[in-house]
Image 1 (spheres, one colour):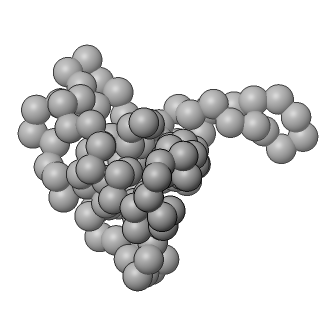
Image 2: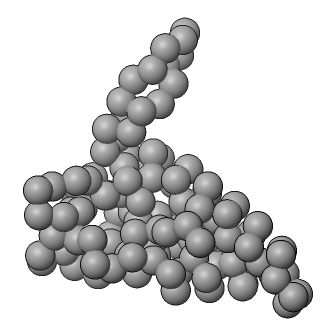
Length: 118
């Protein structure tokens, strides 16, 4: 289950996703009850000392969501409404993709869906 810090108030908890031939699935290591999910298996990352390597974990999914949040902030700041964190989070969660999952993937394991950019 989600625990602190993911369960802390004001935090968007993130689950990891993996590709399968039938759609996205949740790897065994991912948290239960995330609010939203993103790719988290075999994510190309930098290696200590130089170079690149593939890493897996919710720590790989979270930067993906952070980048999507930055794009939502850009859109909210350009809109004629007062910008707020609540508006950005609402858009992030409302626009998550839900038609990308393998059959049987539980909402409790994937959250509202796959984080999607504006």
